[in-house]
Amino acid sequence: EGNVFSPLQMVLYPAVSRYADVLLTMENRQNRDEISQLLSMHVLDHVLTSRTRVQRHNRRIKELTASSESQTANADNSTDLLDEGDDRWRDQGYTRPKVLVLFPTRGTCWIFVKQMIRLLGDAAMVDNMDRFDEEYGPPAMSEDGSDDEEEDTARVRRKAILKQKGPEWNELFGDDVNDDDDFKLGMSLTPNVVKSAGKKRRNVAGNADNGSGASGVSVKLFAEFYRSDIILSSPIGLKMVTTKKDDDDEDEETPTDVDFLSSIDICLVTRSDVLLMQNWDHVNGVLDCLNQQPKQISDIDFSRVRNYFLEGQGAHWRQLILVSSFADPHILSTFRRHSKNVEGQLKIKKKIPSDKASICDVMVRVKQVFQRVTCQSVTEVGSSRLRYFSDHVLPKLMRLKQKHTLIYIQSYFDFVAVRNLLLKREVDFVSVTEYARISEVSRGRARFLQGRKDIMLYTGRAHFFLRHKIKGARHLIFFGLPEYPEFYPAVVNMLNEGLSDKVQEEEDDVSRMPMSSLALYSKFDAHQLERIVGTSHCDRLVRGEK
Image 1 (spheres, rainbow, N blue to C red):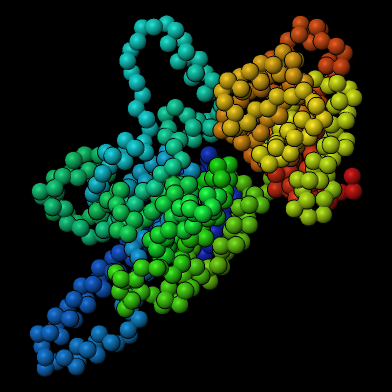
Image 2: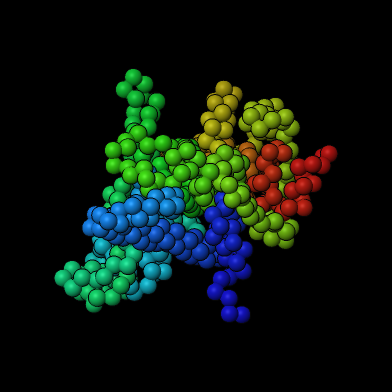
């Protein structure tokens, strides 16, 4: 009672406030706002404290310099005062940007910035707010009031389809959010600014502010990177700025100007699970560019640069915060590689009780088999799984001539391997991927439902971005477990969808066999398996003899 923070915020705040590296892998729709609120407050506190310190030192140095020039008799005393504790004036890095925040979409960036401006209160004066709302906020919805019944029917049908995709998908890719993933934005904050009476700005309430002489914080959106305190960007957006194609080799990319990332104190990676579905290599590429020694030094006042930057140790004083809804080997590897903070690390992971596992959401009566594939190292997981599928699963499918078989493949590289195997064995199949055209997807789904194609290959990224509801499946094979635990029951519950009794009666006995579900996994898939079956069952499935 009386606590400002929620229980989760009270756990996070000590590590965040002492600038330790944090890996949080338990974000969900229920706690996302409180996590974002704490982190945005931490970012604002760091930037405003740093800017206030620099301004105070600027004023003090100016006073001492003026005193030194005007009072020649006391020049020695003034010089001693300037030299006294020389390191106290070291209050900044090579460049002004202090915080880097990575987002998957413009819509998620818009929500974060709005939250920061709300935390600043009514004293905040914001420049370019209208432009920010136009480019990053919800797209303008057309309200033409058309009386065309066909358009109204299509609109109602689309709303129903989008509702079926779930609230999580609609928050990222719905019609009322901006889902563009190529953007970059500079944001500057100037504390202790007196509102001028002649310049109109937007305050936090969205009203025009003519200036009342009160002290506040000036916020400028769309500032130049070198004049920004916070850089908000998507990984691909920042990569387009920091790299260019090599003229000799088009596949090779060389870094260009990354000096504005040389003095980053806080790097916050939000919605890491979504970034993982986009391209995690872009995230690693951005993190590799942080805290490098600058190439252009003409505008740097080295007397004000902190010693650890001069010694090339900026990465050891940088705070790295990764927020994700689940733990993944790629995310854990990145955190292990780039977490070098002298203040240590904090990793927060949630154990999954058996009654809260996603397998409990399966509503279809089907026998679910989890088959462990033996492999000795993580580099052999893909080849071992493909070998098991080729030697044990595929021959049985071909021998029984089993129809209506859906193969869910999490990785696109695994999809290419399975597709090539099926082509080599001359198996009749269709595929639904994130790169396929709409016409190809529609045609393939129709042929699979009608039984004209026996097998459908369905990639995990296609399900993440498009949330197709596949009809016509009676047999399911997971070629690797889904990253998102809710995908497992969602795909299993698709079994028998769209297959009427009449259609089943017209087909042979083989197609009317009992529905089945087979999931291939290895001991290196423990993270995904834990989210699906629970922590206790995961230990038994990974370490058990059978």
